[in-house]
Image (cartoon, rainbow, N blue to C red; front, side, top):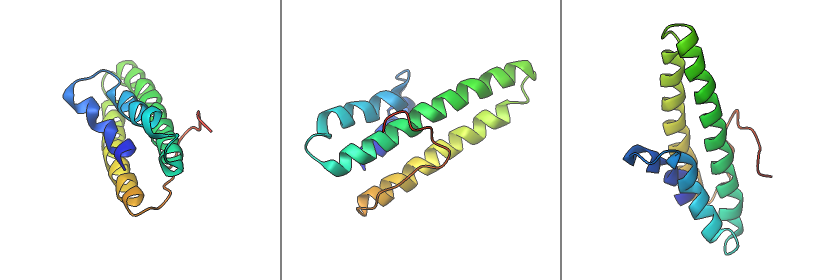
Length: 106
């Protein structure tokens, strides 16, 4: 659960905190708990994916003179909602898989 919620570190102003938070938790706890190994990779893959999608949406917003801001907003909402859903599932002992996630770490 902590891996999924660690992404909210970005809200305190740490650049790429959405990636660094889950990364730190995963690196520290992955060898002790197989569940954290799996869900940490899942959280990292999602946060890396959503960051890439956000960068593309940002470029799209610039090219379209701001029309892409809607996409950025929706990505932000999706990131928050899906992270909370994943944290609740992990808290219940369920293996959660984020939708539209690129599997960088397998």
